[in-house]
Image (cartoon, rainbow, N blue to C red):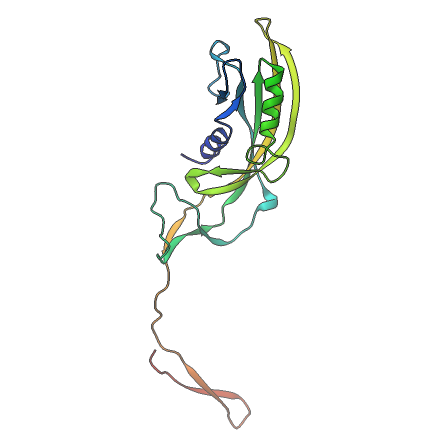
Length: 214
């Protein structure tokens, strides 16, 4: 998948498979994006709803120059541990991708349970958050910018709906430039000049050299 969609899939995968208690036993909480817009009639609770809210250039992390790309280049072969080639190009542009994460439940007990679960280190902790962007083969930083914020309301069917809302940021990067494959230099051929400097009658430095074969 292309950039942005990789990060969308990563945040959805990270928040999928969480379980909550119910009268029928543990229930798996689905995670879904608001695009395509979920129909109210098809919504089941509890549910985690994701919305991508911003994609911004991260100038504070930006560096210039030529570099190697050690993460997976989608659709292209990757070098093995003994290979002496790799992908190189201009440094990619760092970006921040922000998401709103909304946990919706019918029961206040589930609201509390899921808020406690999401606070753990493998999901949405206050510090040290991370996310696995599998198609790139990288572990990226995930920051909690806001939340948990609790609220409750009555929906159009007159039923109580409890929510916990978060704002999270995924650190990523994108290269708009061509990334090329380069082979390592195995051998240098040519001559090495060995200069023998002397002074002429006027004090100027002159030189002679020999040119042994390499």
